[in-house]
Each structure stands twice: as structure tokens, then as C-alpha cells.
Length: 172
Image (tube, rainbow, N blue to C red; front, side, top):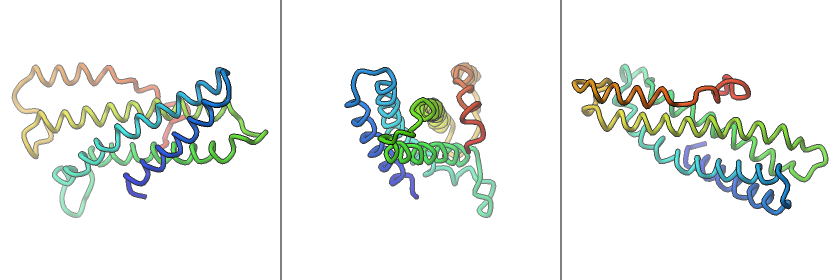
């Protein structure tokens, strides 16, 4: 499934689930489920254009024509895996949310964990775009200004990495 179709499907499911859980009364769990689907919608919509831009220039950084691989492609792949997992989980919730066997707390914990990962992947995509904008065209590494390098690394280390462990360990 291409990135655009995956994102649109995820957004549609997130909106449907958000509307369903918003109408389930004032309970804490329903409020959190509605909120997590709102977050998924927001992050997916914000991430898709960034991933598209990264894919449009990723070929410039491949080792050679026979080896289409680099960090930008890896970031896009990892984000797509996260989106695919959220799409699968959103479909499951939409299909089973009325069932007496629906494990609300388990599904909520899964969705919250993957939303946290998606949020950090969006931040990483932002940093990757900044890196592309700061560097000279076609250059992978900073050249020259040490202050920019230090600022970039200082911001990068503030990213929360714990969301890629626990429930999300190895999803990519």
C-alpha cells in the first residue's frame, strides 16, 4: 500500500474510532481512546508530507544505483511500519469495539505506545528535513559551522527514545 493510501485509511479509521469513543460517555477510558485516535490522526497527517519529501531526495544518498539504501530510506521505512501497525490496530478496534470480549485497556495501551513512537518518528523526520536544508545539496554531513552541529546534536538528544522499547520493541 502506498504512503498516501495508508495515511488516508488510517485517518479515516482514526476519525471513525474517535467519533465512536467520544459518544461513549464521560468515562476516562473512552476519553483516552478518543484522545489517542485524535493524536494518531494529527501525527499521521503531519508525517505523510515529511516522508514524501524525504523519499523524493533519498536516492541522492544511496550507495549506488544497485543499492537503494540509506538512513533517510530507513527512517521512511520505520515510519511506514509504525503507520501500518496503527492501521492494523485501528481496524481491529473498529471491528471489535462493541464486542464483550474487547480488551479496552490492552488496546488503549497498545495505541498509546505506538502513538508515542509515531510522534517521535515525526520529530525525527523533522530533524532529517532540517539536516537536508542546512547541508549543501547532495551532502550528507555538516561542513563548516561547528555551532550548527552542536545546536543540532543538542536538540537531537532531547528526543524521547524509550517509546521504541517495551510494547514497540522491534516493530520495524
